Length: 475
Image 1: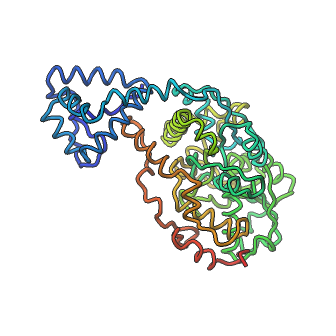
Image 2: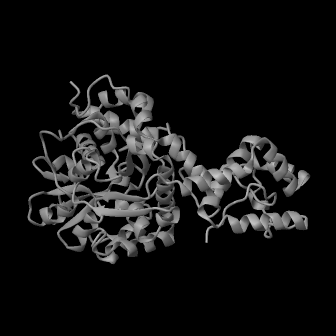
């Protein structure tokens, strides 16, 4: 069962901002009057319902606005008493209206039967596992998830309205909104469904050719042109002195076809998502040259995307759907969640992979095909907050390779297309409501510079950064 933090309990920290977390009492009702303890117990029983949990999150926001920190909140509650505080705060903001707001959102979902698309890769763990483990049903949603072979098909089904929302590659909602590769239609990045989670795989015959400077003439596969895979591969070989458009060949291959293409020697390697990197090792046709987290730790990859039209027309459904996917994402990041999700996604209607492979990927203990057993816990991570740094890098790289026009205001476009602020507010509300829920990335600086292949990228210097890189197509 889920237990929600009650902002009217003076014995607990709600926001963990005042340094008192270690002083929380083992008995959350200790020292309270019988009436106050009874009131809090009744509220605790009520909060087992998801809609009441949403109300607790709203109450938490109100209390934080009034008292700013846990220390002031707790001092007020101890002075006024719980029942007195409830009455006093209700005169300022009717708390019953918060309950009604949450209940109305749950009761008035504009659309309950939804169709979401996914490509069968482990990046989609929260979306797939969310279906298998019942996360959508908790919020009154009847979700059908549809396995889609490749990204071009997924994009087209999104644009023609077959999918209400979808598992997408980070650059895809940007490309769809800008009309790159298809008719323009406004889509938004709602949240990351994974970070890290990719690898560069080479055919076994290249075991002794692992210096990328020696890859001239190689053919590589990526899952889609507008993908992190394509952008990361281009960046990687460029730093090694190869022009990705002239010295190597890059082909688009749907992820489920990657291993077969490696086996038949149609490609020398690929930068791709799992499970198809680990599957190449499992089938003994390739090895892992490098995990992409070694290029950029916690880099974005796949996202959950919704159209602007869906968000506008279905605000309550959007809140419920976003909450369910964020909850699944947080669960997938836990050690026990990784095993549960691996087991739930193995069947044919989901990933259709041996559970052994999925556990190797999600737990980060795996053979690399070079005779080593690696232990990399964050081989794939589930950090849902899409930052402005991530978005600006993607947009600037799309400009670097001439996918988008010059004179692009990367920061303004990132702010428009990526729901960073909205998603962070939802994450904070969920954590305030549920002490067992953690998003370790919720408070990160969304404009902070990152290190990518040993070079610092700062979003405010995006254009200067790409102008200083080798092999750009901007001229």
